[in-house]
Structure formats: C-alpha cells, structure tokens
Image 1 (cartoon, rainbow, N blue to C red):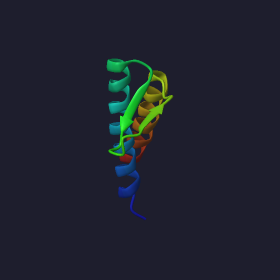
Image 2: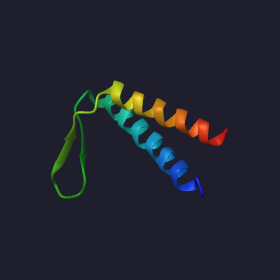
Image 3: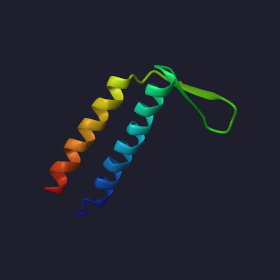
Image 4: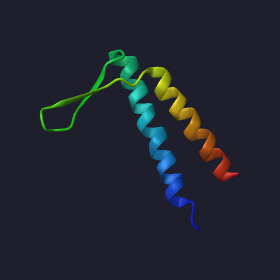
Length: 66
C-alpha cells in the first residue's frame, strides 16, 4: 500500500494551517474566507488550534518518512 496519498494529505494540512495561522496573526482571531459566492465563512479556529494541527501533521509526516 502506497503512503503517498497520506503524505500528500499531511503536506496539504501543514500548508493550509500555516496559511490559517498567518491569517490569524495578521487579522486577529476572526479569520474569514470569501469562496467567490459573496458569503464569508468565518471560522473559530484559534492560533493555538492551527499551530497544534501543524505540529501534529509534522509529527506524523516525520514518522512516515523515517
């Protein structure tokens, strides 16, 4: 069984949560995203949540690569 899909998922998870963390740091705790529909999706993700998800995904990725 190939681990490539899982590795790609974890890499995207790190990338996404890094962008979320950057957005929170720049704009504050309420980070919103307009998906082109004109409706804004406001998430209640905190900076701590994003950093925790980055750390968890990085840990899993490191284990898979070792």
